[in-house]
Length: 339
Image 1: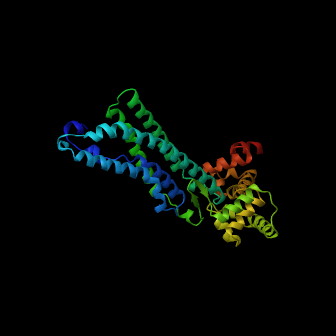
Image 2: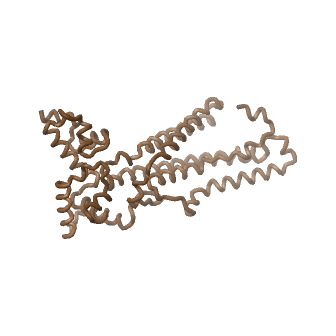
Image 3: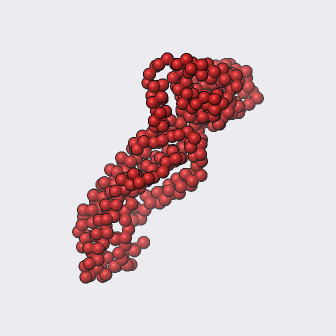
C-alpha cells in the first residue's frame, strides 16, 4: 500500500505487535473449548502467554529508548529498531513462534483425535459430534502454517518477495478465520455438557473415577461381579425386546436412564462384559436389524438409506462406514450375496 514511502516518519513499527506467540496457545484452547463445553480459561493458563508478554515488554522498552533520541520525530525507525529489533529480536521471536506452533499443533491434533475416540464411548451416532469442520480447519491451518514458513525462509535466504507475492497467505488465513468463526458459533455443544468430559493439559480423560473403571474394563480381562452379570443379562434382554437402538439419538446417558443404572455401571458392563465401545455395541444391533430387513427384501420398498434410517442411523456416510466395518462388505455387495 506504499505506506512507508508515503509517511516517511510513521512510527507504525513500534505500535504493531506480532501476535503469533499467543495464537498457538489460543488455537489449542479453542479446540479444548469446543470439544469440552465446560472448559474455561483461568488464571493458571496465563503461563502459556508469558513469552508474548516478555516480547511486549521488550517492545515497550525499545519505544521508550528510541523516543528519548532528539531526532526521533523526523525518522521512521530509531536506533534500537534497526540495530536490535530487526537484527536480533525479530529472528529469535520468529524461530521461537515457529517451534511453539509446531508443539501446540501437535498437542491440538492429539487432543482432537482423543476426543474423536472418546465420543464412541458415549454416542451411538457420532456423526453430529465428530466435528469434521474442526478437523478440516486444523488440516488447512497446518498447511497454511507450513506454507508461510517456507515463504518466510525463501524471503529471508533466497530472494526478497514483494508484498503482492506475500499477501496470499493473509488472504486465505482471513477466509479460514471466517469459516471457523461461523462454524464454531453455530455448533451446538449442549449434548456434551451432560457427559462429564474433562481434559488434562496434554491429553483427554473422563473424570478421575471413570478413568480407573475404564482402564480396568479395557486392559484387564476380569470376571464380572454378580451385580454386573445381572445388569448384562438385563441389558441384552432390553436390547432385544425394546429395541432402543432404533433411536438415532441414543446415548450412554439416555440408555442408562432407561435401564435405571448409573452411567459408570452401564459403561463397565459394555466395555468389560461385551468387550465393546458403546458406539460399536449399539451399531452392532443396528447392523443386524439392517441385515434382517435386507434378507426380507425390504430394499424393494425402501432405499438402502431409508432402511438405515429405519434401523437407527442418521447419516448415510456413517451407515456405509459401519456396515463395511462390521460385515467386511458394502451394503450392495451384501445384497449380492443374498441373491
